[in-house]
Image (cartoon, rainbow, N blue to C red):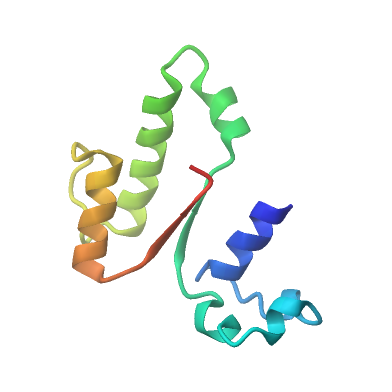
Length: 104
């Protein structure tokens, strides 16, 4: 549950201000600064364990994440052979985006 709350707080993909209403974090001076400002990679490792079957888990996980990054950032990422770290770096440089990596 805590991981989902972190993702909800940081992720640009949702408007979660009401979710934190009444909690102490709402009173923090940096609450608004970071709320829903980042692209978050949220990984459900159990799902990857099931999906990997007989494949190498690390390679499978990296390939799946790379394919999602290609969908989202296809204008920056044209190929998948740079690896995950190289792809994230390229996106950051091209877009100036902060990618809050979560769950790795």
